Image (spheres, rainbow, N blue to C red):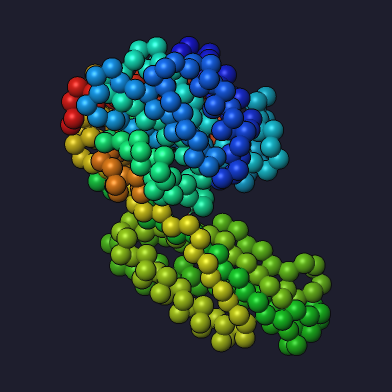
Length: 376
Ligand SMILES: CC(=O)N[C@@H](CCC[C@H](N)C(=O)O)C(=O)O
């Protein structure tokens, strides 16, 4: 597929970002493209708002899987690009438009050059939340086409185009979403002693919870809590009866996560006594770490060198990915693809360099070709 076609697919997908399990236009777009390239070797099945695409091999000994996530974020795009999001308050700010385009480009290659092994391309909804990988993995459609190997990529704004990176073992963290609701007593701004002010309680809580990490967790165990959103009250001259914090917890080891949740519970109990309020917590979506199979990362690094793509060893990152659930069941790996953007992931001005699209297709196609002749 030409660079121009890859670019135009990416731009069309970029304009229709949708949140997890709402990806109906995205699903239709993917179906339309796949219909254009339909051959008897290709079978497509829907799973919720996602898709599974199976390409039958010419002499299959196994099934090689590649997974792309398809959802977007509730972020208002601020790139000023001519092909900006047409969906208010939604943006492909995590590069899933790139991931899908690279998967489509790779499918197109194997439609024109039938593979030896069976291939399974997985277009997975809801990676940003509430998590599509685990239920998709457990679905009948996935189980029927279960791959022997699976891999995935993620764009890396800080890496130059032409570079990929990965590592053996742990690549991404364990995650848990965090939603905390405070309920106190509202009142007139001039009578604080008659109310229970949840703006003050929640503000203190945000500051205090950072000490769970700095004082409660072994400094040799990496962990973090980020509160990304805070809401309270309705008007400038009334005391807020309610407040809500929304965030995420990340840990490099699965064992650290329950320790943090236990300490959070103790802190909430203390705050509800001290501020005379109710505090409820919801841990939302939880993702298992991304743990790469060493032999496949080794094979991947060799393939990249043979194809003039620079391979760097990546450090582990505190990002999360529900692809970790697939890697828990299926051997494989994940890698970062350099897209050289001054603004990072989840930034309203993220603008990945489109020259990385053909690098991504080459990396995926050549890895599949090598996996076909060599099991790692
Ligand atoms: C690659 C990436 O950015 N993934 C997301 C996954 C989010 C999971 C969930 N919504 C959470 O925040 O815990 C990330 O933020 O790392």
